Image (cartoon, rainbow, N blue to C red; front, side):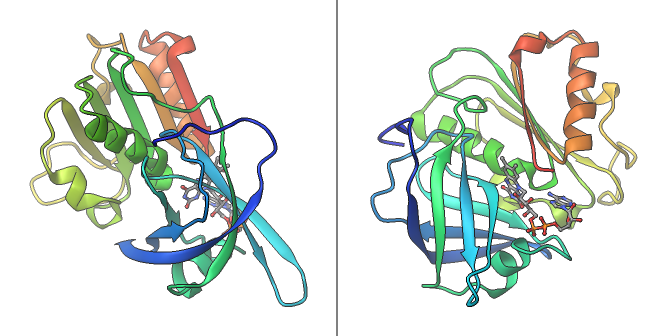
Length: 236
Ligand SMILES: Cc1cc2nc3c(=O)[nH]c(=O)nc-3n(C[C@H](O)[C@H](O)[C@H](O)COP(=O)(O)OP(=O)(O)OC[C@H]3O[C@@H](n4cnc5c(N)ncnc54)[C@H](O)[C@@H]3O)c2cc1C
C-alpha cells in the first residue's frame, strides 16, 4: 500500500500466478506477480480478463484480499465461466490479464479514528480481510468488529488467521446451515439479534451476495446506524 491508486485510464497488465492456498472445498486464494503494480487501498478490486485460443474473452471483478499484495480469494461458481478456471485450472506461472485497482468508495484507510463494523457473507470476506490486514499492518488501534456469515464451519475463508486473537478485533462467525458442536446460536441467517443495539456509532462495510448485502444494510439502518456510514459491495 506504499502508493495510492492514480485515477484515470487503467491499463491491462499481464499478471502471473505466484502462489495459491486452499480456503475451502470450493475456494482458493491466488497471489499474483504483477509488473509495475501501482499499489491499492483496502477494499478495492481488480478486473480479470481471460482470453481463449479462439480470441473469446471473459472479464470479471475480484476484490483484493490483502492491502500489500495482489491477492484474490475466489469462490468457484459451478457453472461459471471464469471462477472455475481460477480455482481449479490455472497453475503457478500461468498468465491472466488484470486491470486495477478499481473503486474509491468501498475503501478503508487507517487513521480515521472511527470504529468499524464489517459484515461479510461467504466470499464477501475478501475486501474486508484486506481492511483487517491493513489495520494490523498500519498499527491502527481502531476497534473492528467482524460478523462473518457462512454456511458451515468448513466454509470459513482465512480460518487460521481469523482465529488468532488480535487486540481490538472482534470476530463473530454466523453459521446458516451447520454449526460446530455445542454452538449456542442456532444456524440461521443474520438477524437483528446478531447486532449490538448499544453500538451504532460505526463505519459499516457490508460485502457478499446481493440479497445478503441488501438484507444486512436494511438491518443496520433499522438498528439505528447512519445510512451515510454504511458502504456496500455486491458480488452478484
Ligand atoms: C466488485 C466485485 C468484486 C467481486 N469480488 C469477488 C471476490 O473477491 N471473490 C469472488 O469469488 N467473487 C467476486 N465477485 C464475483 C465475480 O466477479 C464473479 O461474478 C464470480 O466469480 C462468478 O463468475 P463466473 O464467470 O464464474 O460465473 P458466471 O459465468 O458469470 O455465472 C454463472 C452462473 O452463476 C451465477 N453467479 C454469478 N456470480 C455469482 C455469485 N457471486 N454467487 C452466486 N451465483 C453467481 C450467475 O447468475 C450464473 O447463473 C466480485 C464481483 C464484483 C462486482
